[in-house]
Amino acid sequence: MKTFLKTILTLTLLSGFTQAAGNDYIKLPTVSGKTIHIKGVDNGLEIPEYKGKVVFLEFWGTHCPPCMASIPHYIDMIAKYKGKLAMLGIEVQDTPRDRLKVFADAKGINYDVVAYRDAGAFVEYIARRAGWRGGIPFLLILDPNGTVINMQVGMLPQHVLERVVDELLSKTVPSSKPITPKAKTVTKQTKPAA
Image (tube, rainbow, N blue to C red; front, top):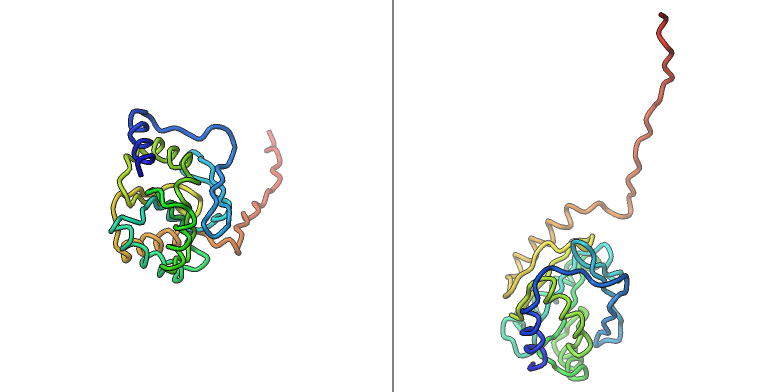
């Protein structure tokens, strides 16, 4: 916790909205053994593992009451929007990875969870880029293209989150039906007689 707060206090001295340097992905190992790759882009984040899905990226803590209250909502929503919604929870109160895995299993968490010690550089990047000062829960909502459409400090009710997901999904063109442009008919014109 002290390391996290110290990092956030240091980052509040920085100004501006910055991009990730280069084309490298930040690799985040989850407590379940997966690796999530994230790269900053102009209007959001590129996350190949979540391509085409609405993404909730939440910075949270195991000792944060509103964070704990949000967990059942996210579990329900991941089940409801199976394959259309992805969730990545970055725990920022420095719970060790092994204890965080036990916690996630005990709570029945069905989404990706990453420990702070494995995500420090990414947390710093988001703090700089979003102007986030460390209040949790802190939620970023990304549309299926990876564009950040909302940043929220504090818990949002499940019905509000579902409304956002429904709206974002209704604007998405199904990937199974590609859009093909109609061919134009071109007619040869003759020169008018003079």
